[in-house]
Image (tube, rainbow, N blue to C red):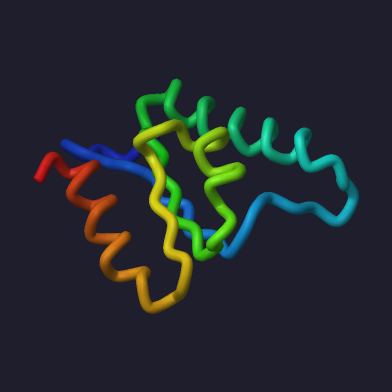
Length: 92
């Protein structure tokens, strides 16, 4: 947040829903990830998510918000989805 920039965003690239070695409650993990995203947004750092997981619709919206994520069902879809996120967050 201290880095001066006209525009900035944080990209979270993931291969699936949140997990932890000592927490097994799926709802808690999603809520924790959402809280981290909201904390960054509160500092003026928008967060967007790109996940390689065909089943990501079940959790990605909850974590990142309705317009702040993209899903690549297969790795070869990453370039197209990354370009879409870039366009969204750069104002292009």
